[in-house]
Amino acid sequence: MTHKNDTLCKKPELVAPAGDLEKLKTAIEYGADAVYVGGEGFNLRMGASNLTLQEIGEAADWVHKREKKIYLTLNIFARNYHVSGIRSYLAKLADVPVDAVIVSDPGIFLTVREIAPHIPVHLSTQANTTNEKSVEFWHRQGVKRVVLARELTLGEIREITNDSQAETEVFVHGAMCMSYSGRCLLSSFMANRHANLGDCSHSCRWQYVLKKEKRPHESYPITEDESGTFILSSKDLCMIQYIPELVHAGITAWKIEGRMKSPYYVAAVTRVYREALDRYFADPYSYVYDQRWLTELEKVSHREYGAGFFFGNQGYDSQTSHPGDRYLKEYDYLGMIHNVLPDDMAEVMVKNRILGNTSVEIMGRRLSEDFTQVLLDLRDEYHESIETARVGQKVFIKMSRPVHKYFMLRKCG
Image 1 (spheres, one colour):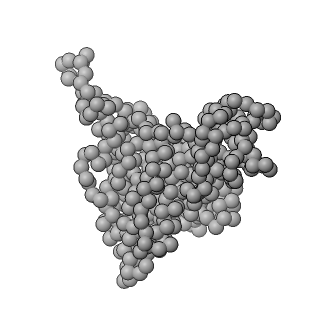
Image 2 (cartoon, one colour):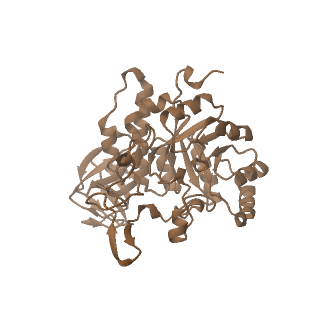
Image 3 (cartoon, helix red, strand yellow):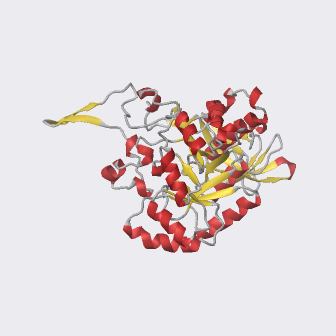
């Protein structure tokens, strides 16, 4: 059998999260090859806005006109009371031109094959696929792509990918669960919110103390450092420094986590991985890692970054986030440009308060398009001069350089 890595590695598909239509369009505009979305039920991010069936159809048309792909998550671990609803949902989804559904539960997989057999199926990372025989099993059942478990090393991923007839996908950036590929029971126990049904309370991020049975009024911190104890809070995954290593693993698709994150997060992360991938495949032999990429990724809200298990278990400090549930956030997302008018005026929807006569960064779809300017001309929806723009307001801003729809404004906090 010819292994995938016996020939020149193919450029992987970059898959970005889309919690709603705005994020979906943002992800595509900022360089994603495909997006993954949730419907109104049966996915593991029920806290996201998610899309109606009509919106999924509209999104599919919009994405396909740009020669991109859309995947729909149906990745809960269903209970008996979900079955009839899933069957009804799939009967309606059968006419929607999604490129694949992402499932975890064998029962949902079987139902997809029964009701909508023409829709390709991707196996979610929640299914805990950790070896080539498991990939072979699922491929024989009709699974097109397997999203591998996050516990695997690059070496294991390479072996599985080489020996598999199915496509493989891995997460390369975003939040990680301190549980076996996200199969968490802690949230159900602590908050009666079921992580495997999409309602996780993120109990692993909470602060905990130790108490002695016979001294119930005394508590002791499980000390880790001066920030407190966060023994279950993992670092965020960030593989931007290891593009060649990921490419040589032969993986079909690279996935960014974050369907509940902001459009700014989706844009900022997607464009960095897009640039790194394009630069590598433009000339692999002269490829050089650019420190600006990590600097840009640090401008979005995140926990401490790490490489997960890609290089094996590097020890306690390599996995656990010391600041715990406190995100690192250096920049504020001020708003997105929704329209460009004559005379270099941009229509902006305000996401955080904007002050006139202050310096802000304009973030383009590519890093080369970024620039900084002072907001000397800030106007309200009636084109009257204002000093401050409030959240949710539509404003008009005079731009010092050409801009385009979907460009963003941000400011160092």
